[in-house]
Image (cartoon, rainbow, N blue to C red; front, side):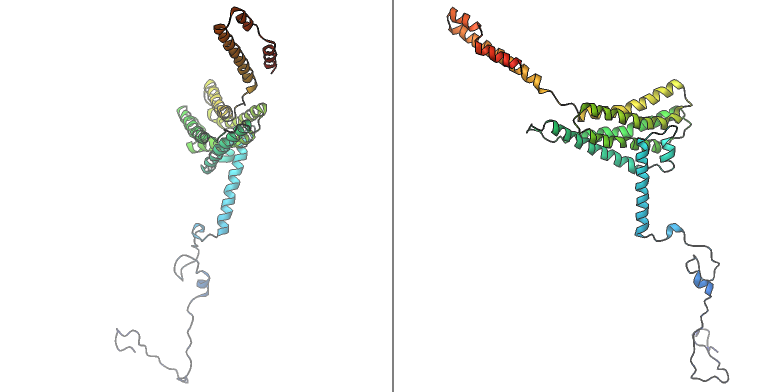
Length: 316
């Protein structure tokens, strides 16, 4: 027995008969087998199993993060393609944006459009003025493109969201959803801005019309359910404004960044005739001050060489 309550570590061991003092002692395992199998449960050993570790608390591997990133890229690509291809009676916001609207895709769509428009505009200007050694890169085009694109992508959705709230639309479009739709709607202008480098005016205007019709139709199909219950006149005006603002952005880019090349030939002819007339007038004035009346009369009569030169310039 223990001599004192404080000496808890001293225990008398009674040897059974027949047991030798030299026998080896072994440790007995008091842990149950089902407890060993449930070590991954939350709680102490011996409690009832069933409360497992939540999936969001488990350690994720690099492969899991890579799979999530690939899924995000696939979703963004699907939304970009959907913004370019209108489908009759298919709402782009409901089919592609809900229930997870994002700002990652719209931000990078706008950023890509800024650089493709500015770079392609400068490249088109270089091709037009390829023989002019004074051509320089215009960095202000990047600033202007960024200001125009991000202003359009933020102010227009904000105004549209306010109008829908004012008209008490039953569609229930949130501000984030409308902002996401407008950001992705600019995706079609990225390849169009690259094709605008081709110095063919009819092709550039054709691309403008194609982009306006395709992307504008997606916007009209998206916001028609939000205004169909409103007054028909108000709904028509609102949809027309949405389409025109979307098209004016492309027209503005075309006119400012990809304007038509000048025609220098008529200017050269006008300059040549003006120079010839001024030169002949100066000679006549000089002879009028320093010559006799007979020489003055002869000076007003054009010589054969002047007639040949004058006719040659007119034929240019």
